[in-house]
Length: 167
Image 1 (cartoon, one colour):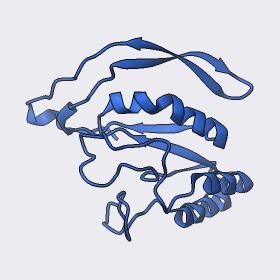
Image 2: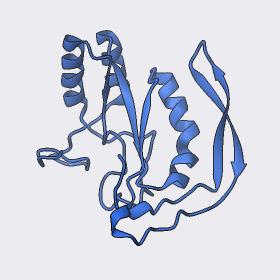
Image 3: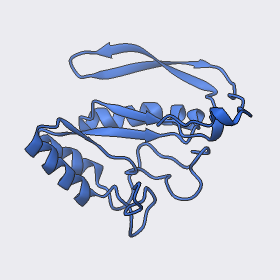
């Protein structure tokens, strides 16, 4: 992606495909890695996602990524899929989908998720409703959530030195 060979967006240069992920899982199994993180598998990477994030779906894969086939393949190889949820700084959109996303991951055996909050100079859109983990089932690895209401938006910084984005 950094060299420009692949893209997060759908199309001929889309990097997060079923076939490519299986290749990385083969490499991971051969070299003793326990997991492979795939960024760009889900819908929402097309267009202006940076600092926006309204189109991200954490349960719908792109047409060239079969999340069920990938997780099954990884399980046979002893390599788990590490989930990736880029928010584009839109935490409200993320938290509105979080419970369904975790149910999907629980069903597929995905036990780790990396989140991303790429936003321009801290322009984070915060949730109206917040999910709080209330109970962890150690046998199944599942989590129960409760909700609380709250609303805020992180102010954008005007200082040029604070434009660092942590991914």
